[in-house]
Length: 215
Image (tube, rainbow, N blue to C red; front, side, top):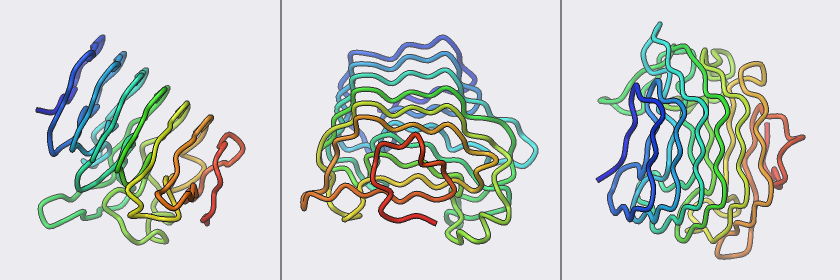
């Protein structure tokens, strides 16, 4: 069973073992003041903010979230540990059954702290182009939902190697709507020892990682 929050505030999720094939925990629209700590997640999609901004004109807010002391093993399908997924400003399709884009709102003051992984595709995945594979189109139609003040601290472990030589990806649709993303003390490697990150439209000043691929 996964743990999703929706239109919720002042929530604590802690001291649990979660085995599933969906998000271990997901912060859905209008989730604020949340603490998640001391979890062992196996076979999940990670701990996710979103998806947000799916419905045009709707306002989605996720803010003041602390995720602390998490172990993540054998994540399935969208194999991530710490994940933020936001739709772009243009209608996009993840699949025939999952479409959206153009929503409003913000992601603010999110902290992922002290997390360990084994056999997970991405240690960090941040995207404002959720459902849109054409990066140029996403850049031309940046998300209406801003991301700011996000902190990834003390992440360790070994990925699955699926995205080797990269272990993380941070893709913003525009620096105007995506700021203050920090990554410190990141000690995550692929099985081959690589530790690159894909970085797009993001200020690298606060990223203590190797942006091996950027645009």
